[in-house]
Image (tube, rainbow, N blue to C red; front, side, top):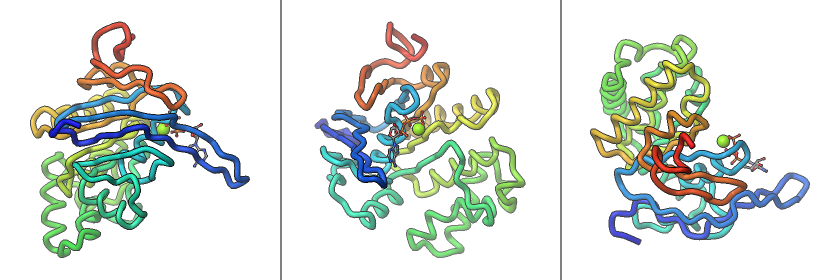
Length: 240
Ligand SMILES: Nc1ncnc2c1ncn2[C@@H]1O[C@H](COP(=O)(O)OP(=O)(O)OP(=O)(O)O)[C@@H](O)[C@H]1O
Ligand SMILES: [Mg+2]
């Protein structure tokens, strides 16, 4: 592993077990190294295992087998509580459905990770407000999620993902529920974060035009990586 590797995944497999006790193998041995500052798009058909992989990379779930080293620490065998602590400190997660708490204002949604980390309420609100302002939503801080457009809700979710200043942002189809123009605005935010703040971004998308804005593309098929290379160019690039 190179010194600058942020993520180093070797031989990761994931089997789900259904309530009926049937073993469902989903990932079949994933090797992936991602350096700090990379912008990686993940594509693949529905059911190919993209979200399963993202949930493991994001410490929301553990692999069945294999090794996952994140920022130099082996997180493969951590229990739920330890995994949650790593997640809160190191990773910002953005989901397709925004996943904001409905009864909380935009400000309190963004402040939530800080509250979990034990930051005082006053300081958490101050930092959450600054993050909302940075993303152009300062004036919407007091709104509930249902008083915001889809694009605004996703920006709140991005502010929440960034408020702990994570090493890594993971976004699983962040534009899946948005129209084309709003999608472009959301992707612009990720591109800017990557280019200007050197944030490491891993983004799942079905849209070739979105994937083409990343530096690197990883294609998944039936739980294996079938392409890992430049995003925009070549016969297997995003627009291929
Ligand atoms: N909790 C679970 N229990 C059993 N099988 C699961 C579970 N979660 C996902 N799967 C199965 O794992 C496979 C991969 O699912 P995953 O959600 O990773 O796909 P995906 O590539 O993200 O698809 P999509 O593009 O539709 O979001 C699918 O066949 C799915 O049915
Ligand atoms: Mg998915």
